[in-house]
Length: 155
View 1 (tube, helix red, strand yellow):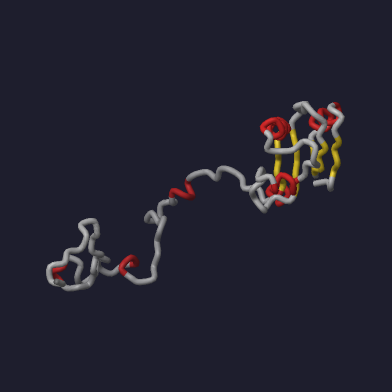
View 2: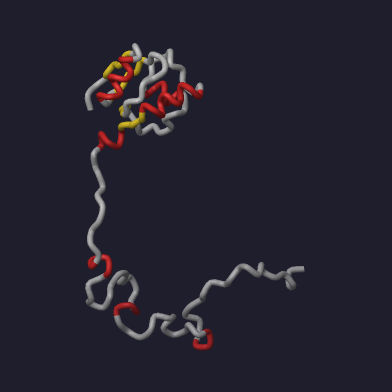
């Protein structure tokens, strides 16, 4: 039967404004009398009655880099790379480049188009890497372990 259905107790009715004096929100519909805030289409968020707003009183902090090269370069630490060899997630006999790291699931994002390796940990076995940039200590460490470092293009 339809007449004895009840709505769920966790549902609250929306406020219906402008529905008569007895509703409590009739006549001016909760907007008060006259003035800017009583008009439609007016937004005064952040306005503090002429006082300088809080968002202008506080100092500007931080910095957003718009360097596209920085955002598209995947930086990897050599110790993390060599840990992946030891755990068996990467094969040290293959050429290590960005495509191989993506196919192995190490680099998940498609936004990276360049690879940079930093750090100076010496690998246990010879490794050949193809990178866009590499730190001097990492290059020496790989070459001292009879590995090869190939640079694709300079950043």
